[in-house]
Length: 99
Image (tube, rainbow, N blue to C red; front, side, top):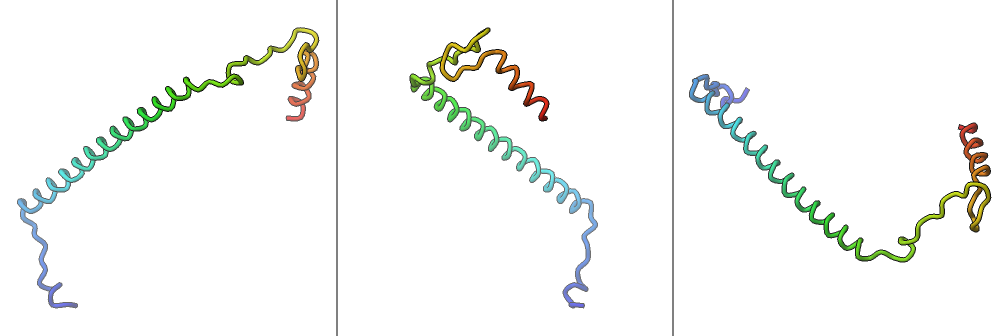
């Protein structure tokens, strides 16, 4: 063994122990406060970015977004690509049976 290690003796005084415990608790508390501040600022940045994106998106509505989908007809398809209710029911039953 090294002669330096032989001379090392643990300090068992109450003052030293209290200092280590208080310093450790203080460091943990400060890190907790720092993380709370970081998460708070991150939330503000994200909220601000979402608000800007939402504001910009509402101003840029295109004609395709303004069109409403055609509802399914009660009996017969009236628009190109539209399915009748009975055809839709058949497709859904087939899919349900295959699952």
